[in-house]
Amino acid sequence: MVDSRIAAATSTMASPMEVSGAAFMLHPDTFEASGAAGYGHPFEGYFAGRAGVMGDVSTDVVAAAFYSFPREVVQLFWEPGKAVKGPAGGAAQYQKQIAEWGSKHLAGVQGLDRYAELGEKIIAATPCAGLPVYAGWAAQPRVSDPAGHAMQVLMVIRELRGSIHVAGLATSGISPKEAHLLNNPGDCPNRPPAGTEYAGLFGWAEPWPDVSPLKAVRDEVEESTQKRMAQLIGAALTADEAEEFATLNNAIYAKIVG
Image 1 (cartoon, rainbow, N blue to C red):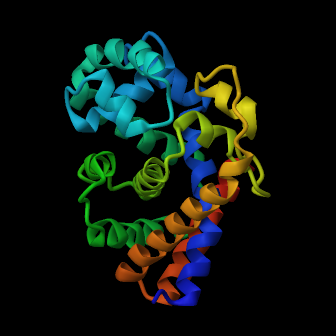
Image 2: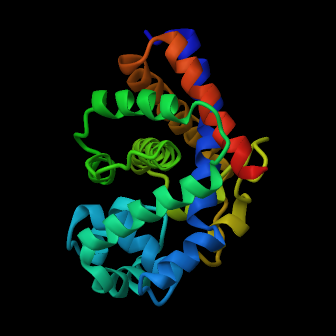
Image 3: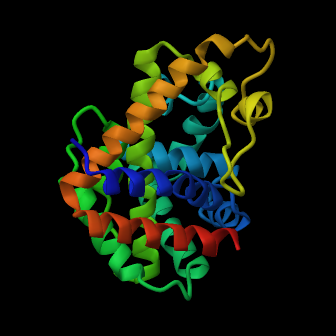
């Protein structure tokens, strides 16, 4: 049984964490840094950085692990991306960019060292079985600078939630394209768009199937994801710590979105 306070804290930080991570991934500074590192397209850096933790795997493996992109999009960016620095080098480069971005964009946020401390407790207590992308990210070294460390921790835990959610979607029978069409941006400012626009951002195209019969299934997956995240956070933190972590997480989000 998950403590109700931990469940509530987990819920309040889900969307802000998602948006904070997306802000880094799509920020001009990140694109510029990827170009400076030798990547011909920013998404080559993204795919090499995010999937590089799994090693020199095939396009099919990355597409399966990421779930969100059509295979042809993965192939377009993963194959040339991993050739720049190799998979391990791409992952290390991306972690460096996360830290540098955090140092720049989280300046002035109070409690970043505490956020990193609590986040590391969650990471250390979380079993990696069945979550290969998360496992690779969790194993990456992190910097000592509080802002850079905090941003790296945020991205690791974001990857944890994403890995759990993708597993739930896959077992539910919802396809990646359907999942995008079912996306609900909610009331969190600066969240991605919904529906066909969101699907198009990831490379999916018409025809658009009717996904209305799947909304209840998607809601079940979201509920299951939230429940599992609350269990993992509850295994690592007290209720007071979980609420503190959520408050600090949302302060990071507020700084990022301005």
